[in-house]
Image 1 (cartoon, one colour):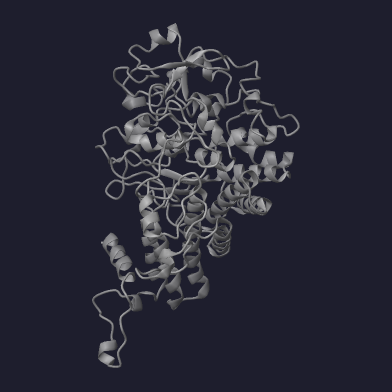
Image 2: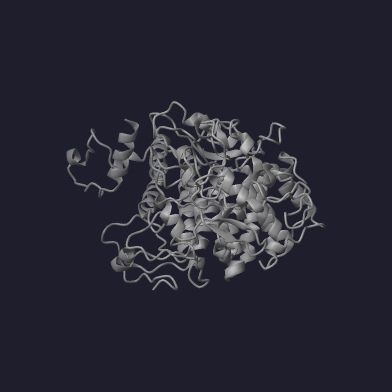
Length: 591
């Protein structure tokens, strides 16, 4: 019934206003249906309408802002799988072709909007309809402002995502009809659009309540969530302008630093920790109910009979973590594997975990932990398992992911009715955003490092970062940034793995060339051939170590990736969109 009411509300807003008449009787509004004239009265009316806006983000990869997991048995879209666009994962299943195409630079101009792409404009219209009508409610202005702020946050965030992918965008601030001239307008220049985004986010950060009285349940976005969104958006824009070109990047970096610092200093959130460094990093990623978790700022709940998923069953479609990802974890002395005497090598997978950042073993499956995690429904098989091997979960790289793995969400459940939640925003990101913004501004201090990076490391009892003793990792010698910024970027990759950040990070840092590095997996030699019988793999000699590894994409369409600096940082507009509006121009390189 609730969903039906929401559909009725949204539908009625699309109708033209009822024509007025001098006859008193004809001026009476129908008592058996909701109309635009009768609806906007109470706070509950505004709440119900905004619920319908949130509803548009459910299972809708078009908005890509509150994106969680696809519903039911769908396999392609999950916040966990977005890393498939990047060098973190090695998807190989045909169902994830759109990830593989994009990361290999082999995507083409689509006929219609693609996943996570140039669609979702009905969402903007829904936001603008609300903003045109909230003022009619007969309630205090500060109450109206809460719902205005909520909608402006969602609208600004939506547009920031579209700008990040397409550059210039068609900014619209009112609800349009089929004959509205704005439907045929040119795109608003990026920097002008982002000023409007910033205005939306600033309003939200000022007018949203600190909490909605929901007890920390996954309900409405509060002011602290708005600050995190603002820091995320401003960090993207500031670094984009710094590395790609644009006016006043420091303004955006300062806004990112200010927003994240306010959240850190004044917000009610903190890192989740029970004092057990061996489990605290991944423990709360692997449970069903996150209500009251001190680190989680916003999450999507999935509940049997309401909204479910089956993402746990599709970890094999991620292909596993890449060799590049696994090698980025520091050794316990705080040095990269290229410099640390503690590194045991990778001749066998067990060696990879020795003397490494504890987050590695809480992210990638150690062979001894298969029983602990009841891996693949506690099937009792030995892991890892490589593509081609008989039975069990297999991966393309050999590096199985257990950061979010929860066997209990599959055991005894019918297909498509699992309930694993999706964490959309957590406090750790605020720490990383602040550290990076300060570093990019050239303002970072040891106190900043202790407030941010070292708090993350302390949770897992990892060696702390010393700003005066930053290792110079030859792996990042050609990135064009200071060793300190390189290490902050590494920390971000490690902490936020499989949370949907890496691809956007590479784009904003102008590090697309990292997608040209071959995607490799486990060390491959005579011992591996014996250990992994019937594995169906090809190999490559790593030019750095001169050792042989699984080459995930050898012999496929993605074997030789390309990345054109003048083209691939932005996505192409769909052909049908261009045909419908000749004023729109295609992005450079995609003509």
